[in-house]
Length: 114
Length: 110
Image (cartoon, rainbow over all chains, first blue to last red; front, side, top):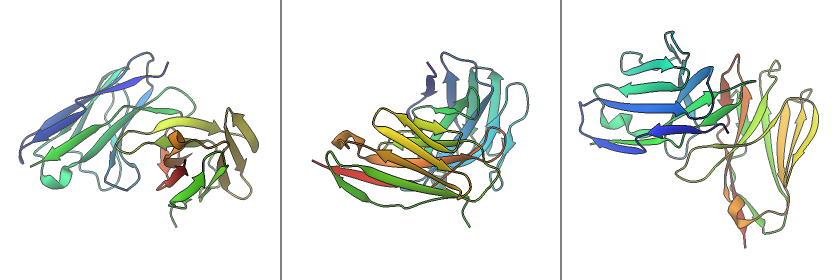
């Protein structure tokens, strides 16, 4: 149990375009979903916390208008990187929480912006 | 002071030996502690969690927690080459949020 999927696993896009990443909890209902970003040889940085049916909570320094989060159901959250630029190239990872702070991670999406 | 601190390594151990990883945290109110394993280019995988002081064993892994010292550790017994990865310590920040350390890279020599 506790399987989280992400789609796509990798994406290459041109600067200025928008990219949508989906995160799904496949075998459980997630009370909360999280979006992280990880640059090479660095740890995970929390970008935002997402609860179904409510607005996402963004961490300090993360632009909410650039990283749009929609949490449509207890099993689906999406992250849209709007007007992507090369500095947004990173490994984006979602996680879903089931209970007692346990977070289960999706496989990640590697975004490359040309 | 970082919220969660780990030695970055690399920690190199021979196959069959014990790998010992350490983590300290700053928030004395933290209640939940996690160890994740991350292979290069992959996302983290939960391997252990611990909530109470003392030791918790799961197969070849043992997590140790000392809340008074704000210290949590992970022991990997009988290390295998497949254990070569980066190990991330995570501590709950507040409801449902985790703070991660920078990770310790472990290399198991065959």
